[in-house]
Length: 421
Image (cartoon, rainbow, N blue to C red):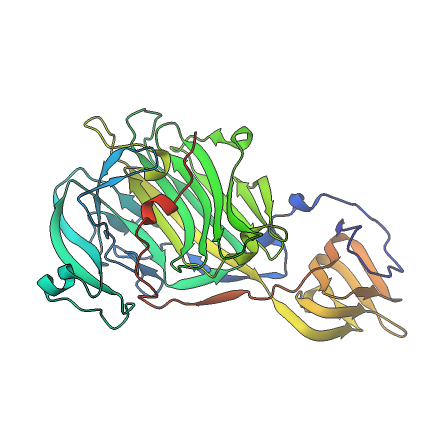
């Protein structure tokens, strides 16, 4: 029997447990916990096109290229070329579903794509172009849309759901990848809320194509709060490692009301706390998967020697805990197969005349106030049992996202990531 036990939080009367093994909380991956329920599964089982019920192939607040000039200055002062993001859902040049995986393909080609420019309204520019704010835009901005040539093209995915809290995981590789200083790209699995207050971003991973350096970050700008201010929480240099991108890897984070934990290939990497930091201000966000050709987050550029990659993604999955935080639950005669693992307001198991035999399987007995085990409770050697007091995941959400919540921030590429030294 494996019994996961929290000495600091547990408010529980345990009358009969024959074997007790205390283990660290990191030993159990969240999705193996029966309180977690699958809310999103993308196995890329059908193709060749992406599933438009789950994904957009462009940033929903713009056409994918929304800079006000032909080039962008990155974090390091490097002038970087714009890259055309393929925005048509039924194309297979930069994005194809094949053999059970999604392949995002970077190309050294000349393509025609949209560029969006923003101007203050009213202004001379808006008047000369005959532009006025569109219905989904703020009244002080007008939008110019131009078709322009781009040197490079790439593909991306953006989920149609916004998510707050949960365990989020991806399996991926770049076939044939080798370390190369000319690999001027990054592969990024991240979340971002296009909302002016606060800036809300969770980078589950960003990997530098040059040496496969693996990073993750949390960025929150709560600038209106004089105490909290701006928070950047990148992975410490001591924990950064190089991964062989030619091999399959699984990367995940567990975003809870109290903390965000990061995992690489099933191994816990680090945890960043929310309670005393601005991470508490993170908003519901869509999942973004992009192959960053010209990796502004790593200050790299594309050159004539760049090995243009194909990023292969096996699956993307999301789990969230089942909530019953308003329910005072009592189980009398119960077995493991009939036990419903949720986060309850409070939970009582057993009692006078009751039998609660847990002999085979997994249960999570969780309450926000207490968990009470009474007479008649038996836990056998073949059980995995978690008994604990958890806060209710207030604000947990999984909901459809509107197409144009706000225009893109002017300095979007600079907000996307912290420079990595």
